[in-house]
Image (tube, rainbow, N blue to C red; front, side, top):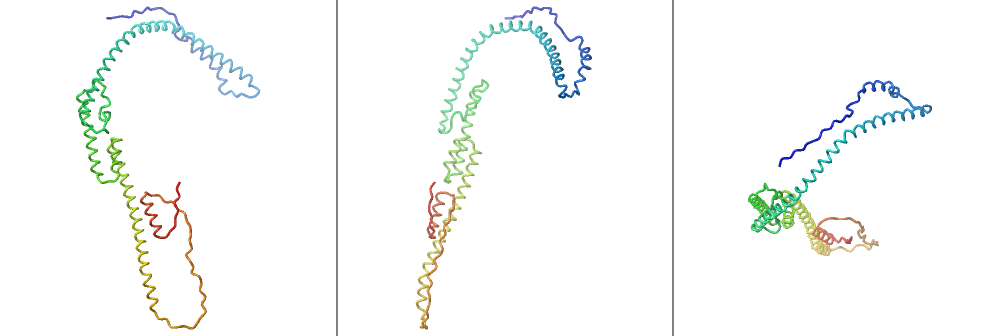
Length: 296
């Protein structure tokens, strides 16, 4: 129903401006001029303090007048404001009551909408790693988001996930760390980030295999070298025994004890996979190098 606020006008005689503003400014200007280049000394400090106090009193007198006049202006407005707020409070009560009931119906509609979306999601029979929150539009609660459109979006999003998962499965079918890559995609559901992670694993794996191959090759070469030396040793001894040496004049010979190779001890720290460390240990054993494993 139409309503109209009827205001009561009151004539109020309040100051509008400072009538003699220019005269006051002209009177103050020469008096204040002396303070522009004022230099306070030890002898004039008492006088300077008095001047400062007088200037503050003048400033306060002007401020008090301003505040007093402002209060006179505000008094009629404050009455009008309180009356308007009183009317607002009367109107707010039924607004809040109606709003509560509207929200109940909106909540029912939202729950029914989500139930329909859940049925559509379950009907797709997706794997456990895809949740409804992964494929459902975050703005599904808005009335502008139609039910059939939301269902179509869920289907498109789920198809995208399944397609990307199949591509990952095919790309890394024979890769030892395939499960880790698949788990990464299930967690992130981001194909680009998963590919970055997969390339990192590929690089580390290839580097590990290269190092392992180098260590095994070195160990095999050393083992073959030792076998060859062992095989040639008896033949050399036999060849020496077949040589007939004529008797020689007795000669006093001083036999020096055989000088054994000097054993030195060094410490070093290595980093690698378990297979690499085992290969390194095999290499050192085959070369007769003593070593001690120090556990943290």
